[in-house]
Image 1 (cartoon, rainbow, N blue to C red):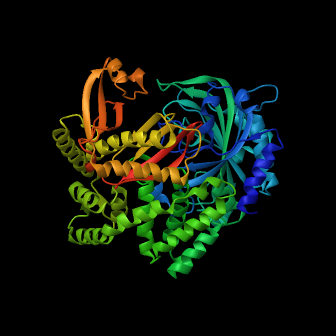
Image 2 (tube, rainbow, N blue to C red; image 1 turned 90 degrees about the horizontal axis):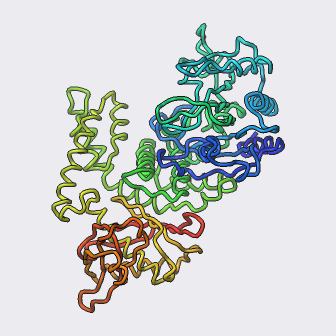
Image 3 (cartoon, rainbow, N blue to C red; image 1 turned 45 degrees about the vertical axis):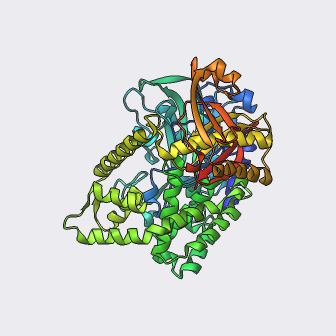
Length: 597
């Protein structure tokens, strides 16, 4: 069975049983307390908690999906048989109950029926259940249901919250006990221990393939578990893990998901996969993850999701060097990933390789010198510790993320004083902030020099959009860090490449002209009468700052907006403006991502 066939068979199975098939949501969750979408249930969290009506919005209580997911806490573990950064989760849900709903009994029957359809031997299934812990009692109901459905008591094991209680995704929300289905691959994979079974730490004999979460509780802000107003079923299959089992492979890297990618790495590097498993797997995993992160419009940066992308690109460059794999061929791996997934997730067709090339160029300028510096540092150490100051120097001078420094050190049995690194970083940030305050008279204490520049250029971009697209354009939101700006604006159609170029050229024209930026304080009413744009009036007080961008010779005004600041004094300080991406943000709202060079 191919991966495409498995994905289709799962969705068809539940569609035939009254489930509505829901497209995968974005990897960027609406819940800002988490960095990425890590589970299929995240897009349904408000329905699972009873805050939204699932029947009203989906016309059904029963849903199924193949969800894109991304997890960052195990990046260093990528290279073994089971860990990935990007992965897929197959899931089915029954949200709230009615005469047609199902809870534990229905979820258990569907799971056993589908696995039987796949040809997996029921006699090799082992189940783990929640044994009870704290204020939450043992899941006796689930135990009895498994026994009634043909799983003998000796193949059912009980565990606590760590293993058999799921959620919530954030600090609060829906959660509940779960039953996990483990498949016995055979004695040849075992450790031979008397207590060997599911969750064995000493072998890979038992593979967890499906998690059935019985949502009965809500964890509140006090950390208490209260009964939900409705019960829900939330299940998840690790897609990569299941396809490995069905294709009788040790890991998904040997399945059709990565077959062409691994073959290409062998051809280019002239190395064998079996001799360099970790390196091949890291490169393959990261190529896939980079494609999917780029498809979400993420660009490399030092913060948030952009930091993860930068880290993956730089790890890829390093691991390519370890096996003499020409990084120019990394883009052909990305092509293979796009080809593999374009019919399932068409958004990957928008992958922008130039973003990776620019990051590669930036990192290549320092990586060789940096690696030599690390090597020299390790050879010079009498103890086996890299100090905080030493690791911060590598970070600041060569752009090596602390995780990459730790990884290289650990490979040589060294440790990194991470606490010392964080202290050095904090000290550096305080010094930079003080310098910024001195330069900008205190108004930029939280922005830094690049933040101030990006804040200013959003005004230029806003004005340029209104001049090129029309005065219906208005700012709907923005997000700025030291690496880029993101600007949301009201506009009903996708911008053409010609329109994007006109906007970009107009902004750069004004920067080149060296327009002045003037700050004035006045009452809000007076600001509006003077022609200043103020789309967020409810956020302003009676007195406001008005920032005017104008030609000092002709006095012609290009932009005039109410804003809290801060901004540069003259546009010539900004550098070159470049639009990286224009995309949809929501209905009637477009989004531009741009950088200064």
